[in-house]
Image 1 (tube, rainbow, N blue to C red):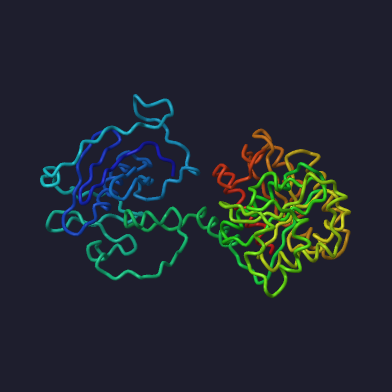
Image 2: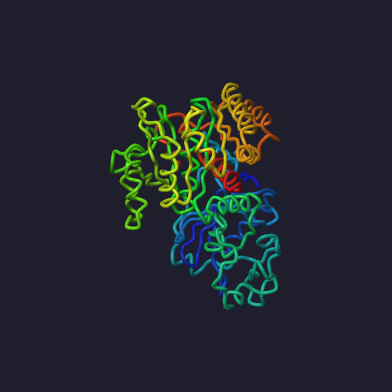
Length: 457
C-alpha cells in the first residue's frame, strides 16, 4: 500500500482530535468501554473509504507518535519508512519536499470532552477487512474484536489474554497491538526478515569457521569480514572473532576499533599455552583481541607495518591459534590474505566450514574470484565441497554499477550455492567499518547475505 495523503489524530486519555485530509479538525470521544484508539482507526477507515485510496494515519499523544497505513477497504499495515515510497502531493500550498505539512491542531478542552457527541454509526470497513459492528441500542457504535468479529471489544477486553506471545519477534507490527489493540498478520517481507534473523542468531555445538577469500587485493575481503562478523555478533550475542589471517599488510585492524591493549597475532602466539591451560579464564583472551563495542565482535589483528617474512605462520602455529579461537569463540570469520600458497592460507581452507568469495563490480575482481573457485574445485574433496556450498558476495563499488553487479551475479549463478549483492554505500568505501553507519537498505542486504552464509553452517 502506498499512501497518497496524511491524516492525523492527537490522542489524550479518552479523547482525540482528528484532522482530515482537507485540514478540517473534529474531536472524537467514545462512550462505555470502547478504546479511543479503535474509534480513531474507525474514523480513519471512513476517511480512506471516502478518498478511495490508502492514507497514512499519524497519531500522537500519551503513547508517542506512530504511523499507520489505512487502505480504502479498511486494511491496516505499519508504515515502514525504508520500504514505502514518500507521499505523493495532493494538496495545495505544500512544502518543496512534497510532504504535506501538518496543520495546527486546537487544544482539547474539558468542555470539548464533555460536550462532543460520540461518533455516528458508519458503514465503513472495520479493521483488517472485518466490517464494523452495528450501532448498539444506546446509539454508540461498538467495534468488534479483530480476531473474532462476533465478540464486541467491550466483551473481548474482559476475557483473559494468554501470557504467551504466539509470534515473538513481530517487529514493527507489535506496536499496532500495543497502541491500537489491532493484530496484523506478518507480511511476506516480515516473515523473510524473521527467518534471516533466526539463521544469523544460531548457536552451534562447537566452533564454526567462515573463510573470506579472493586472491586479488582490494576486492572487499576486509569489509565483508567486518560486516558478517557484525551481523553475527549483534544477533547472536557476541562470541564472534574476526581473524586477520594475512601475511602481507592486513588492514582489518586499521578499519576497526582499537582495544585496551596494542596487541596482534604475534603477541597471542606465545601465549597460547597459558590460554589453553585449565586455569585460564574467559576474559584472558581480552589482552590479545580488540573488541568492537557496538557490533559485539572481537578482532585478532595482524601487523600491517611488518614485512611478510616477519610474521609468517606455520601449519602448527595456525593449529595452535585455532585451538585458542575454538575455546573462546563460537564463530570465527577469517579475513584471508592474498598469498594462496602460504601455509596459513592453506590451513585456513582446511579448517573452514563455509567459504565466502567477495568481489567488487569490476571485471578483474570477478575474474579473480572465478579463478579461485576453479583452483579450489580441483584441489581436494574438502575444497570442492566448499566451492559447491560457497556464497559469492558482490559489493557495488559505485552507485552506477548496479547493472555490472547483475551481470557478475548471473555469471556465478549455478557455480556456487548462493550469490548476494550489496548496494553501494559510502560508509563501506573507506574509514571505520561500523554496521550503524550503513544505510537501511545496505544493512538489510548484509543481513540477507549473512543468513545465506549461515544457512551453510
